Length: 141
Image (cartoon, rainbow, N blue to C red; front, side, top):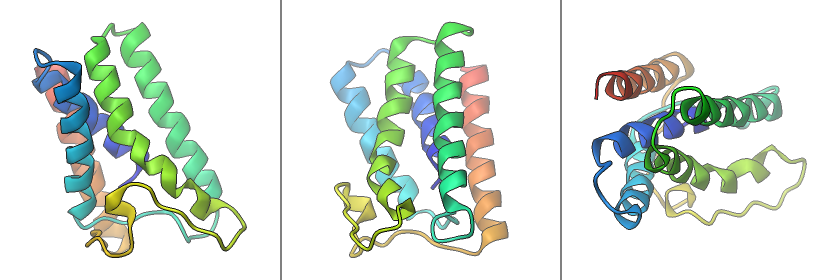
């Protein structure tokens, strides 16, 4: 899943469990990341210009979080849920580097994990739908 998808879904989850403690929100956000990585999707890594897509993805996520807090005024718990849900994807950033060494800290990024994969068009459509649902949850919650 793209970082922005994890960011938006984490924020939506955070808005749904806003009355819970930070411990519950962080735990739920990490578990939600794992669940989303099971969903068939397309990742831009190992494709032409993947480093640019990766930078754009992270910058978009950071921008959404910044706007959500500073301009919209969303609660810190929602922002934290978005950050925590997206943070595990930082361990795959080294796939964008021109080295052979690869490391993965988060379990859903290990090679033995049944990470969801599908072709580009349906994979983008799935992530777009998940993002749209997350935005709707944030708007109408």
